[in-house]
Image 1 (spheres, rainbow, N blue to C red):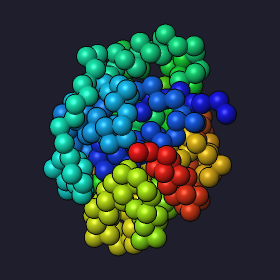
Image 2: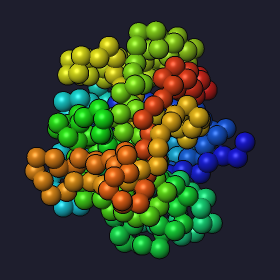
Image 3: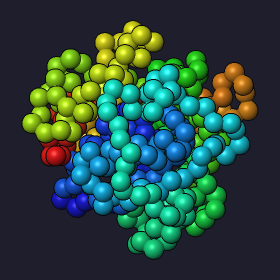
Image 4: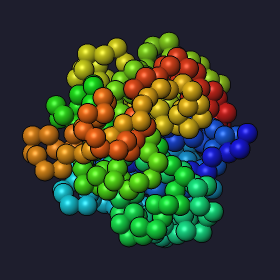
Length: 314
């Protein structure tokens, strides 16, 4: 199988941490070029530290981590400590990582890597606010034609928002960045709350991770056990949606998901609906489709795939 070359843009965050672990266990299918970090779930200093902690859990200090933007393009930063805890990694012991941050800014790394690689060979996978990706596209418009695809976690339409009645967190934090990315002309796959809310943890699913005879499986189980408390309290669901790991599952087995090519625009002006992703599901606007918008997932298949990835870790 040909491996996908990806840059994973992230704001760890508990579900980000599980996604990174799954990526690190998916070496047969994914060539992880780097982790690039952005402010989102917590501030940039913590997201950059947490990304390196997760790499060290998996004994992968060889994965370079580049710190990116510490605030949105135009707005003050909104974070989510109420979900992920003050460190961003509630539920597990954390340590000061030994592996260093790379010296180059994440945006410069993205631009330089895309320019140096053959066109159409690198997929960008943002699972936090889209600030780094938007700034790279603004700084170097020529890279748009070189990106194979952007597969992102963000947005909501049928499910409603999780940070406001209308908006999902990643898009709400930096709607202007989301508008840049959605208007870039790059092939886009969006995994919104509409699909991630179908992929929820449960006691049996977490138990299978905890039973893995390694360190990283039980760590992932501990993270999900802590993480699900917020969603159970807020949304009344029986487990926590696995938002960011859905991107990893889609990369490895897109057949687990279904969606539709549609037009998606982002609201940037209204204070009432800031960050809303307006999905033209029925094609009534006449605007051209710009997104493969995912709405259904085989949840059992996704959890089985992620658990298999975790099983390959130390």
